Length: 137
Image (tube, rainbow, N blue to C red; front, side, top):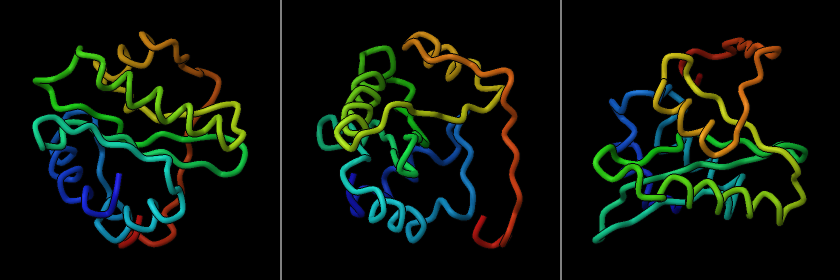
């Protein structure tokens, strides 16, 4: 994924069930993310059009995937799996041994996808957030 891909990725993610976008999911915010996490983000292009995207980053210990999605009409063709596998290989290259993803609790299709790939729900962990600046959250 490059900065040039951001508008098309945002257009794909915008309004897609299961994807939650926030003010930080702006061209500026994602550009910063790409700069901090070089070579860990990927897009899928088919016939010159962006049809999938996955943002990956890490904190030095664990990898994190964000906004992994494929346009609905092209799902079940291995595009999502290929993007995830690519990101995990890149995480492995930088020495990471574990990766996390946040999935909206009501995203049944997303939960099924991740479970199908062998990912586990962690019922003993709760995500907690604190908004520092609502304009940048």
